[in-house]
Length: 348
Ligand SMILES: Nc1ncnc2c1ncn2[C@@H]1O[C@H](COP(=O)(O)OP(=O)(O)OP(=O)(O)O)[C@@H](O)[C@H]1O
Image 1 (cartoon, rainbow, N blue to C red):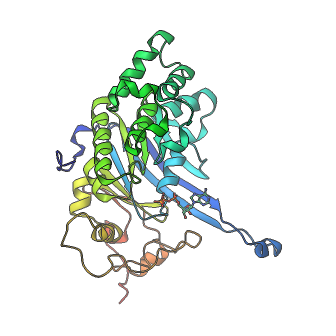
Image 2 (cartoon, rainbow, N blue to C red; image 1 turned 135 degrees about the horizontal axis):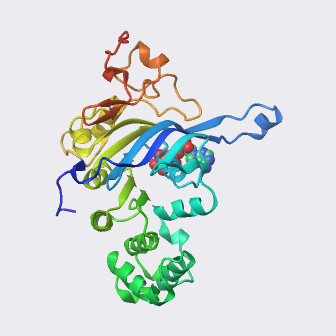
Image 3 (cartoon, rainbow, N blue to C red; image 1 turned 90 degrees about the vertical axis):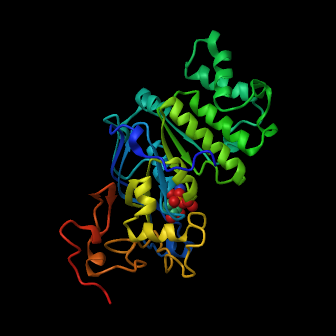
């Protein structure tokens, strides 16, 4: 990773929106005790995504960050239709994804590929890499039968594996190599969008850098659009043109990477960056950067969900949910940035 340390800028991406998420909401029924069930108590719901708005530009890498449980994976899974949204809209090249069925849904599922943290769990342990790729290419008729072997070799080269890898079983590979196999399988379907959910978090740091750099090269070579969901802000900064920050199921800030890391606006983003161990060594304060506990997604605070932990919260934050509004270099959902002024009483 040392080869490129500069922050990526959105210059090379187009302003053309490929995926437009608006008002996306997803809840899950919470677990319930036997006693509560016997008493007929109403089941609570986990508010995993609430009114999420997000535009993804063609050809960009968009990082998605936030504390554990803030809804990153649910967003990724809802985008690929592993989950059905409760409400809201996802438009891919203008077509409503939440309504797709049959052949149109299958085409969408080819165009938008998700790669998971643990490809081992989704690889058949008894199938060689060649068999896995042959099956994907054959079932989806990606190549005529006579061209399949050549395409398998091409895919292995693309992800930096030797051609001999085709004859080997998943357990014969290291974690990083298995991630490369997962990426090759996704690329076999010639997607336009890759969604990488915690792609490298289970790998050693040195291997993480190799896989992330591979993703960076592939993205530039194949003009892919990438959604990079991760905890590690250092990796997100390295890879992303823009970054979306989530808190308790909402997008609270989106900005180009340089702006987000040098001039974060939302108090939550400011806290998240201050808490990151790897960004600016020596500049961390001894105080916890974000005070208090993350509220339960069963009981999301009224108004701004972050206000119970926000050092700058004022009266309006408890009663009115801030909308995601445009600011220079991005968007932010915080009353402090209301173009009409914060309008409220600062809580002493
Ligand atoms: N299938 C499910 N059933 C019930 N609750 C769920 C389910 N999936 C996610 N949740 C809940 O939804 C909320 C958002 O979870 P999600 O996994 O999307 O967060 P995340 O930001 O990806 O977290 P992490 O970084 O730990 O993966 C959490 O409170 C989680 O417990």
